Image 1: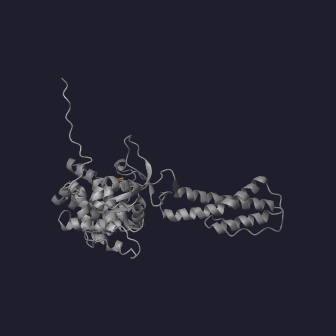
Image 2 (image 1 turned 90 degrees about the vertical axis):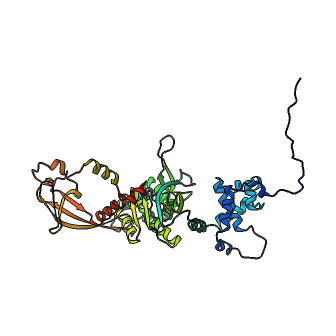
Image 3 (image 1 turned 120 degrees about the horizontal axis):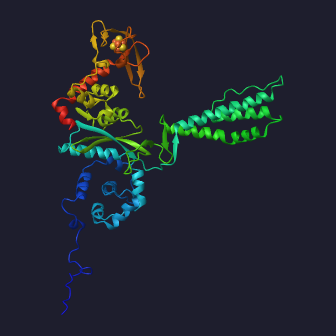
Length: 463
Ligand code: SF4
């Protein structure tokens, strides 16, 4: 005999005596409760002040901030998806108190009133966590990573191409003028040469083309030259204006995306096929403590080194306090960064290039006796002695500027005579007597960093 299955009772049409609240469905330790409680404690008066008052009612900015941040936490970035979640997802419904702003309201709020304020909210959350002792702003660990921009990777502008195109236009203007001169070669009365052929100013370029056209009017002109002049008059001033605009947007960078001009083309980390790719993005620098993000900045250069100073300044400005210690890897160990951290009174547990190699060599007892920093130095006479025992005397100093404008001072010392030295092949490759360059400030800063990094505290931090 077949036994019928037993179904659980379906209560879909059952009315409740007391309607349930959204709160009944949210577990006590659900992350949405954390987002809600933290954002309830954040001061958003600067955003509230942007509302004029009167008129029709508005969704409270705190509600909109809550749903945006919780949306990000759930990987929902699109305002349409968030709108959908507000109608379907019990956690969003609870968070918004049943309010259902549409995607336009969410998007306008995000790109309007919230613009430039997000960092303030982030900073307040960090301060809240710091006040609870969950993280410490005074002790930060810094690193950077490339973050791909939400921009078209095929619409790029290259600074070098702009320079080349400008130079090509200048060259062609000169060639056109050279043609004018050949036309007037037999004549005594020659037209005045245009002021300049630089392809920098659109009006100037248009003026130069007009001068060439005027000089050739009424003359027998080659068909190709006529065509070229027609093309130049129509396109070149416009192109120069475009180049000027793009160069302004580039602001010294070598590339940018047309769909997000602040994004620079960078080599991103290898994908799963081990291909390193050039994509529009940002260099995202983060300070962390206890695995929480303490501060972040977006850089437009690929090298981490040049971004640390601004990042630390942003951190100090955001929290009105300077960290006591900062730990970072060798990508940040430059003379400029060490100098800046020292000036701010921050203990820099920052590695420099070859720190690890130096440590390994030291362990193995490997020393390169020819390395400039291994040569014997007599401070009183300001003289180095090479492995052959020859004096290397001071021959002068010079200064050089880094890309960021930081000035480094280098001192040069030269051996008297390397001719016939049996150690020469091991010592140097120059045709002349060996010259060494010493940067005393960098040597001092590196020695200081090394002391910190190899101390008990330093080893702990590097771990
Ligand atoms: S090559 Fe010149 S600098 Fe090097 S060990 Fe010989 S003498 Fe000294």
